[in-house]
Amino acid sequence: MNKEKLKNYTVLYVEDDLDTRRVYSDYFKTLFKSVYLASNGLEALELYQKFSPDILFLDIDMPKLDGLTLLEKLRKQGSQVPVVILSGVLDKDQLIRAIPLEISAYVKKPFSRVEFNNALEKVLNKLELPTNQIKRTILSNNILYDYQTKSLHYKDSMIALTKNEAILMQILILNKDRYLSISEIVDYFHADYNLYKITEDSARSTLKRIRQKTPKEIIENRHGLGYKILN
Image (cartoon, rainbow, N blue to C red; front, top):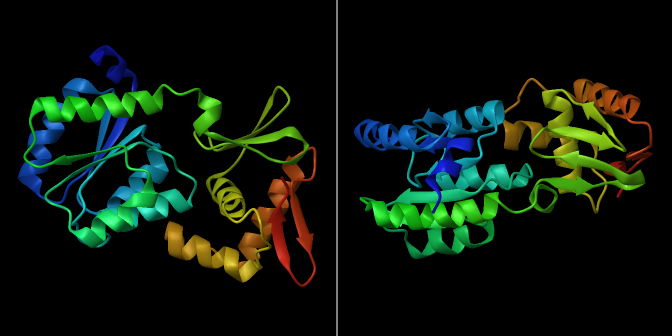
């Protein structure tokens, strides 16, 4: 494994035990470009949305929001971030629940450097895939949504989005095969993104701004059904 490549990547390390977090984070800081630390799942969700780290190191049993629930939320948001589980023994129910979450590697604590390096090798293999294979969705009229930059792209131009506009795009892409009512959209903001200040009126305003920014129509609004992404 080429450890020099790791210096190009940022990581989010989530661990509720302070002593464990200190020991491992000191090691991570020798490997990666930046290391963001969280002590619980809710804090991790906020940091992920703010910094969009390249790699997630995640414990399972944590207060406020457990590791698998956090990862389920991120996957619903469209995140394909590589994840390494650093935890004790997983029980059968946790293993079954983790299957669809596309976890790159499991490392049992306490772990050796060899075990950790093997996990990093798997992560690097995913990170080195062509960008357009893992981070972009093609919409109608050849418009692309980029999960990494949280922006739209049309021809040679990038269309910048605000945080809430990007989240709304990801909600619609997640539900690309059906119409969403405005109340369902607000529920997603509340349940998956913990943005409880979003109202139906503010969601409608966000939809309107997205449609005004794009040169081609990418969101359909059908009376009595709701909103749907065109793809």
